[in-house]
Image (cartoon, rainbow, N blue to C red; front, top):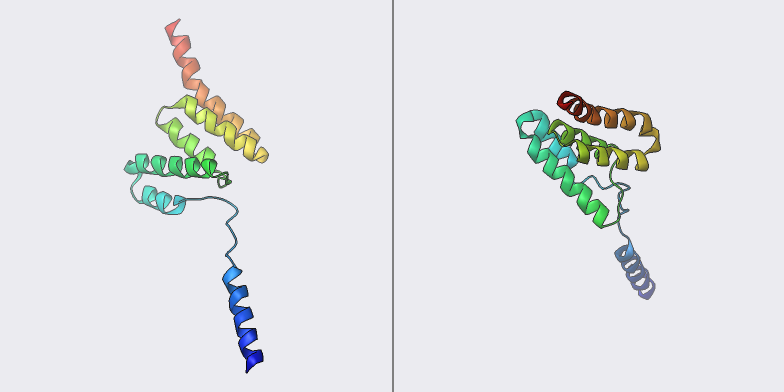
Length: 123
């Protein structure tokens, strides 16, 4: 009986120390936000706010943002007419995920196109 009690206590102690593995990326509530956006695209501002919060929290806690999240956020900002912040996020995506360099360079060029067009029209 004493042996059974010792084994039970040891197993209880070891199981109390076990923790679930931490996820590799911080996704926040990205999946639910995207689902809401697909159901109602007029609510883009809610998706933008959700992604911004996820990115801010991940960076503050030194966790990795999920692949494509900077790019998605940049694209949404670009759709809202915020080219400069869009480019910043495209550059973050490129730095974090080098395999996205070609696409992020094209997206940055696209973000700069309206600025170049406006400057040409003023002259």
